[in-house]
Amino acid sequence: MRQEFPRLNVKTRGAGLYDVTAEVEAWVHEQGIEAGLLTLFLRHTSASLTVQENADPDVLRDLEDFFRRVVPERHGLYRHGAEGADDMPAHIRSALTLTSLGVPVRHARVMLGTWQAIYVFEHRAGSFTRSLDLHLIGD
Amino acid sequence: MRQEFPRLNVKTRGAGLYDVTAEVEAWVHEQGIEAGLLTLFLRHTSASLTVQENADPDVLRDLEDFFRRVVPERHGLYRHGAEGADDMPAHIRSALTLTSLGVPVRHARVMLGTWQAIYVFEHRAGSFTRSLDLHLIGD
Amino acid sequence: MRQEFPRLNVKTRGAGLYDVTAEVEAWVHEQGIEAGLLTLFLRHTSASLTVQENADPDVLRDLEDFFRRVVPERHGLYRHGAEGADDMPAHIRSALTLTSLGVPVRHARVMLGTWQAIYVFEHRAGSFTRSLDLHLIGD
Picture (tube, each protein chain N blue to C red):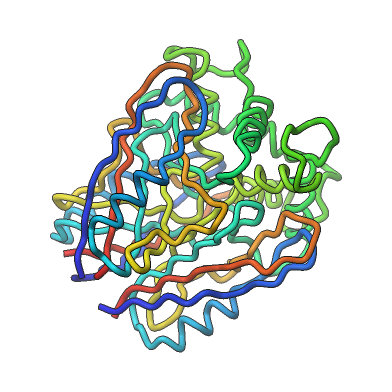
């Protein structure tokens, strides 16, 4: 049984969904671990993880619209504003989605469904480098 | 340390919560792995996982009502509609709940709380066979 | 490869976010497992887990406000009321956040980001002892 621990740096340029599937899959494939468990952990509280459809980009836009509607960026709605008007909505949107994700690995491949992609969901307006820790255990 | 990887096929007939606890527990018990970690991963983006109360069925109905209210199926609200009016709300409801779930295993049993059950939360109207991958590591 | 399985008892006194990071980190550090995967699993359906900012306490208050607004405790809104008016909103708020969480461990430390803390999110009004199961695998 082996373990591997890389960190991916995901550069974001504004709110939106950034597909990290190809990079994650390539890394898993290189490790030569045939069977195991992959855990992704995002080390932030104003960005998050989600698994969504990889086919129609309108799905991603509709998803962003939903979060803007349900968690609005509105003056006077939040106490916490020191880091910018987009910061508190970003924390709430993160709480509603995922910080960590576990996915089985077989034949040295991440066992996603056909239509699934893994996204870093950036909730803030600026440009950031987000740390995504991967952990793979298996043999 | 061993690993096991079955796939459960969960048949759904319309939106709602489908209790998979008994099937998952039976499979874990059969493996003869005394102590370990069970990961459940649902290979879809219009159905999801949730852990909810197993006692009063009204809890499940209220939960469904909530998601219908907060993520309505309404004409003109979404761009993505090619797969049916229930598809985009299904993606959003999936993003708000879980795609994967980790649960400790001891004495060859899934360590759920007394009132907890594991549900596949089907968000679409039709009939589907949903692939639920299990991964058990332990000894 | 070793495994350890403690249970933390988290006492809550009313709805709110209870920071368990220091207790979790202390326990992980004591195990002497250099590298591995920590899984937290909360054995309840009216309390949940979330990772949030550890700096400004206003973030936690705004987060609570959001859940009170989107999942209101309102007479006539839910069928399930036998366990008190705060019980069904608690189930929904749990479904919207996390029941389990996986975090990589390196150098015998939980690899949280600088601004991240792990919270038990109590959704009910009374006083409870919540069971938080930890599972650590590694070597």
